[in-house]
Length: 93
Image (cartoon, rainbow, N blue to C red; front, side, top):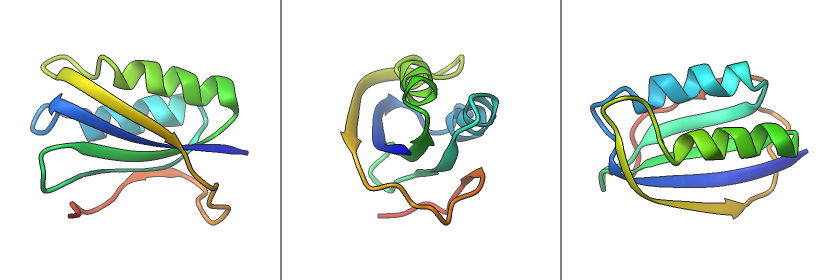
């Protein structure tokens, strides 16, 4: 299983980004989480099949209507076998 950490910058809070990402991730059958960060970014951990992860990453480059993504950072991370769904997490530092 592959896993990616994604940090999305721009106008990405207050536009339904997290909730839309949950829907997209579940449609792509990936597991992980998404949360707002205090610095105004959105951070996600996405894990699953490489093709599904890339589709989620591609969606993150655009986001939902109302979002304006200016930058996206994607990095490889270790998979977390304890994750069985895709959900929101509380805002973090």
